Length: 276
Image 1 (cartoon, rainbow, N blue to C red):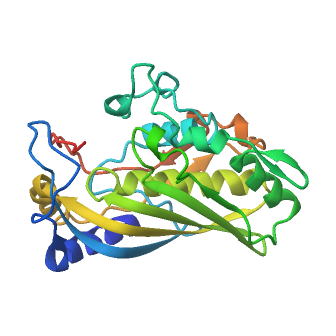
Image 2: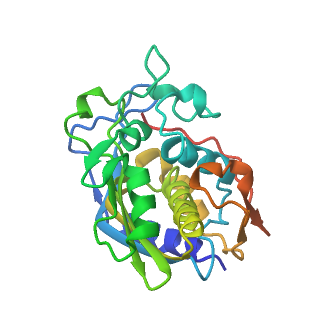
């Protein structure tokens, strides 16, 4: 069975049994009808995924693998904040009159900074260090730039990656300030598992562990029934991630460079309201 399913089931059961509700507080997110979108949450959830054993995609419901990979490339490869360059509509609700999400996500990764050995943006700095200084303990990217938060449509949720090489293995820690378990949990895990594989392949390394650290891990009030139905399902086997082995340059990957072999998730046809 898929380990990602086991993690999802265990975390959701823990939230529903032991989580804290914020119904007594004022909250920013709201539903389409204007009602406040309250949550039940756990603080400080840590999940570990061994990418050498299996690709961490859920089978309890389909994760839109192509779409989440496309968003990852939009952020990390195109370093874009323009939703017209994304190819999907997941950021439409946050776009301004110019079709951008402000100085958020990809914008931050594309800003160049001066280093003793030259000028690099955050992605190119990591790629250089992976090739030339894999023992470095400074391979960190951070999207939570306090100087620019007021110009972001949404503060970054998945905001920091720490890359670390052990021998010939690339491991990473994803830090996330907020995690909507139903709509975004496995989406983010799949994205950053793909990123670790990408970084490893172009650096001559093997993908190792992805550690996912979540500060506020929650289920929205109107999502509870759907989550309760999902966690009653029996997980199916995890698929295999297949990556085009000929890609040696990080910027040559496309969404078609990746596919899931043997992915057979349960259908999920429920309309899920998204809090904004």
